[in-house]
Image (tube, rainbow, N blue to C red; front, side, top):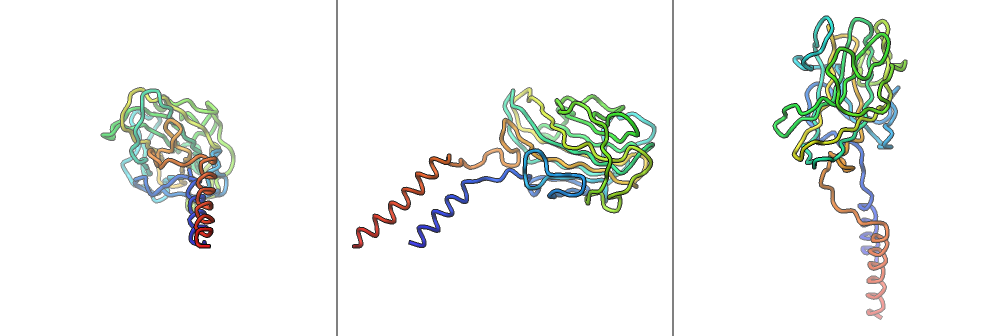
Length: 259
């Protein structure tokens, strides 16, 4: 009897999947990880118990985007790629991001998201975010135009930089323009069927001090988590109830037979 009840409990337990970022399936360089609510970065609107993040803190050299304007150049940073996922033409790619910067005027750190094909070649620049002493942080100024639809479509910086992934820069600020964007939704319609990667990146600009970073969560393609594009089929609640009832019926039938 106990064994059968344990089996029933296991059936009910596996019937509820988790949609949180599984950062172990992503690959990156520089500083990246996963976190729960931390400082100014709350959990994403998805309600997931954690989000992924990247940060320039402890970054590597040689990263950045082409055709970025402004006096100076990118220094060190981090990037991370999702597991490869399959999409059909017309599928919606959706995710959330939150840019955080402790750098201010004169040091225009920036972040981005890209869609890459199965050869890791650029398909589309989805969004940009960039430190600025005034005006909107997203889309980033003097940067290539992004292609995703953003909600809200533009955003000024919100005050506050307390966030552990910034390391020693957490809670600090150089000059004006420091803060965070809050969670922004990005959506993009896939043009052609194929296999793709989603990439997030962030870099320092002109120096390696006063770090910047980005949180991300809720990455889905056609409504399915890109962490697990072929999830096991989960029974509907009514099916789970029937399975449980059937199992208990077998238990009592067995007891009756023994009598």
